[in-house]
Amino acid sequence: QVQLVESGGDLVQPGGSLRLSCAASGIIFSGRTMAWYRQAPGKQRDLVAQITAGGSTNYVGSVKGRFTIFRDNAKNTVYLQMNSLRPEDTAVYYCNVFATTYWGQGTEVTVSS
Image 1 (tube, rainbow, N blue to C red):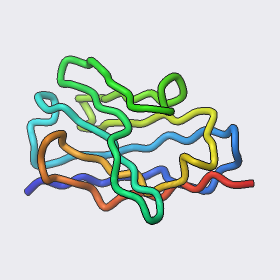
Image 2 (cartoon, rainbow, N blue to C red; image 1 turned 180 degrees about the horizontal axis):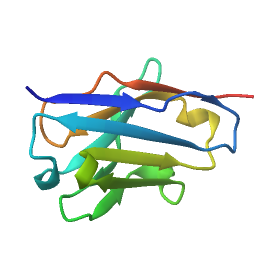
Image 3 (cartoon, rainbow, N blue to C red; image 1 turned 180 degrees about the vertical axis):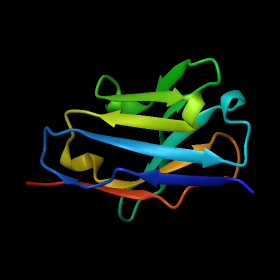
């Protein structure tokens, strides 16, 4: 049984930082591309970043240069380091085994003063 458990969401002021974590089980983690998505209120779920098994990364849109995705295969965990946060980054962030229907429960990030 595949399980993805996100953590790290919080309320943070604009310009602040957060690190999200996603602990995976039930998969051969080291061999899978992992991704972070986000869904803002009233909007669709969008890809934020992905990291391949080999460590190559891809970022989408306005997060480039501010967010960093990385993984620790020994811990079966993928992270999303978010810096210079903006109010428009407010969303529920989801972990995903890329191109599958395996999703975590989400962790909420609110950027507000």
